[in-house]
Image 1 (cartoon, rainbow, N blue to C red):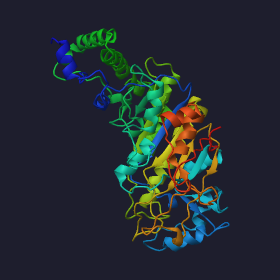
Image 2: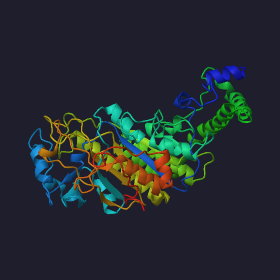
Image 3: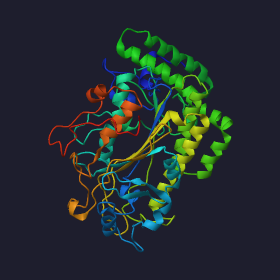
Image 4: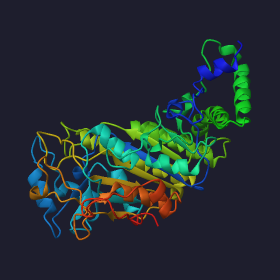
Length: 471
């Protein structure tokens, strides 16, 4: 079957109408390559809890401390058949640190035993009160805000990690992989490429399926076209050529990571199967990438990764302390999957080389509805890894009824003397960018995360990229 240059460019989606790389080009799942190694011998993984995790039943006040956190929690969340209240006795096995603002004893949801084990090792930072000014309770707009690292309406269509990538990588690089069918919003940009694959073993270069007996000739033809384009002086042609070569090589290399992992890491492979959870399977794909890099597989360089797990829109049937409750099952999956993934990384000798962030698009309201919770604002993020300085960071939000908005939500605050001062999401991201990804402080502010104007008590006008969980 003959392939002309014109038909190839049309069929593969590599034609461009201008000298700029169009954003639509990066929307093609086969034109996403994986990063080089500018973060050094390190890895970063972002995990998205899709739907809005109930943070107030994830990190829970056990007592009042110097405030009234437990009393306010008990007043807002009922006990009994439809109640979602989790009492102090059920939290005895998952106690963590104290709230910096009030001194109240805190605990993780009792389903998070796996995460508690990592916390006890000093490998988990619990970052309370995460949010942004004037939050939006729409799933889509809130998700975009956290992905962009920018409050709603102020974004540029790029992600906070995408802007980091654009500042450090070019079109021939494949520095990241999204373990899903599309590029995640955090990675969006138009300067470099990102690989997207839900399961690595099914990753294939998009040869047509009608003529399966001439794949080798097609491969030679594609490679020749890419190499020819890469040699051109026209920037768009050079970009298409270099990114095309990288994509071709990546699809051939990443798919093989599945068999390599199964052969080399059979015990851990079986452990993920035993958990039989969606997040565990996603994390196994991340482990395959890491194992490929550790093993020196050619053309595998993705140091930044992303995956997601859903089900967190718990308007009903949320449950409390019974293992068949919906929220219990969700959080047990997170804790158990993360513990297994960390153990896998430790066994590979890279636990101290990986940082994982766990986030959601928003939290839930303080008062419960009949047997669930509605869309809320601030919530706790988790950062974990061998290099993480474990502990509790940031203040628990003020959940007293008198402090809530009319719809039952907590208020974002940046007041310097406020014991319930919020943690802006951008300070979490900035700490990671500065202390893990090696980006200079000033470059973060000029290229990635922009300060707000306005009232400094209500807006993010002063950054803190030294939160302390990475030093």
